[in-house]
Length: 239
Image (tube, rainbow, N blue to C red; front, side, top):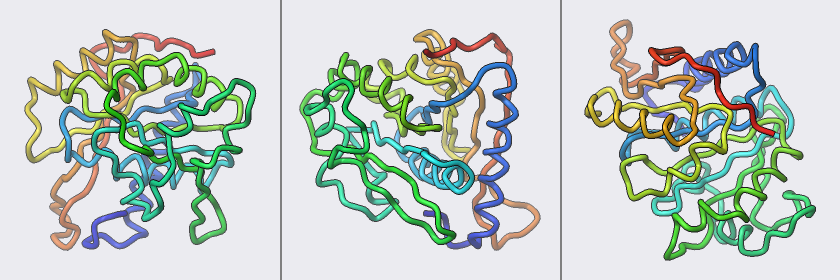
């Protein structure tokens, strides 16, 4: 899940720091559902979503990771698990009041240390990802998931690819926006962040990915993150 040039302890420490920042950011309003978003594909958002969910699960029970990037699903590849049944399958079968854990598409991934993470991969490919992600069934599914899980991490589609990410903007309590330090276009990033907030999302932090480490050349790439920004307005409270 992490680049081999960093040892696992270093990687875990980075994500523990990110987890701590998330914890501090919810002093006024609880943050339960977190969207992980980027502007374009291959900026590292899926790896970050998987690692963040894993580190959250190491401390908290009932953490759920959902792959909503239906055009370019990769959570199952990162975690090396099956994608035979996942989100699209669950949405097609979803019934209100039925426990999320009862669906075949929910997998429990065990990690060293004795903790587990619930994962819903993308599932079967569908011809209409935007319609699935914007459906009432998905909204009701997420409402049910809120009742069963303490934290929900959503790997979202890139903002600049089709319109798949738009319906997901207002379903979360906070958005982590992933930026590739090597190749991201600042104007496109700013425009995409504006789109997130215009559609009801609250960008609570920016994760700068693929940052070269000056202190240790063996580290290769790393992560940086920042909180706050020019627009520090209150996020919507989800019910």
